[in-house]
Amino acid sequence: EMAYIMDSVTSEADLSHILTMQRIMTSAGALLGPLVARALNEYPFPFLCRGLVCVNLANLLVGVALLNDVPRKDALLESSESSAGFGATAPPSPSKSQDSVLTSFLPPLRSMLTSHATGSLLLVSWVYALSFGIAGGPAVVFFKDYWAFGKNEVCYYFVVANLSSLICASAVPRMIRSFGAPATCKAGCLGAAGSVLILIVWAGHPLVPYLCGALEVGLFGSMFGLSFMHLVRRSCPEAVLGT
Image (tube, rainbow, N blue to C red; front, top):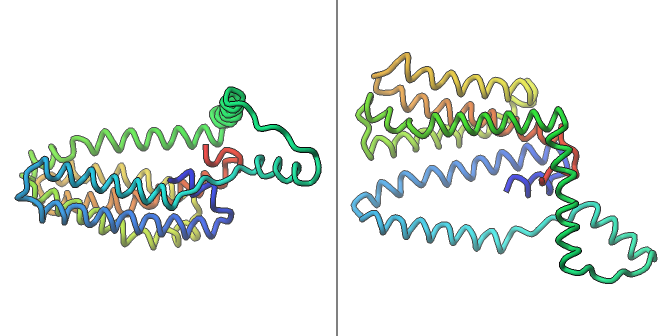
């Protein structure tokens, strides 16, 4: 989805607007998830799994219906040259098509990994996702041990986190315009790490998990996510944005 957005958007202002709308829509959808789960609390687990399968199938149908592949610029150039009178060419064989796809994918990938700018962005993204996954996995167990979290408290936690993300998504673009994408991205990383420390310093306070969720997922998560995509847009060549 993000690769599709990066290939489709041409200006910085449009990118900021689209990323903000995407963050708002995903947060609004995620906000409904805990509420629906709370309403379906009495239903057995297989019923919830079937409902999740139906939701994923609906997402697949929407994606198939609305998302069309963005034509690559080099393909557009070749087609314009052919139409300008350079002669028609026979359609390539399937084996040649597969070879051309592989050879067209490897050079951009190699250039991204060897470039200082794109390689650094990929490393930062991987480390952030890894640390977020490691911290987020045992979080519910930590909440259960120190705050006696049950199903209701977990639902309220995700409601607060997604509501904070919904609110902060509209404010982060102003921060990026005021302080710049690099400073906003750094502040988002440091803030997400600091919000986890709140759980340790104020362990046992009843509102600390909700405050941590609102800060880590809502405010600092939005700061990192939106500013990081601006850095990707500025640092990566257009030919590799979708890669």
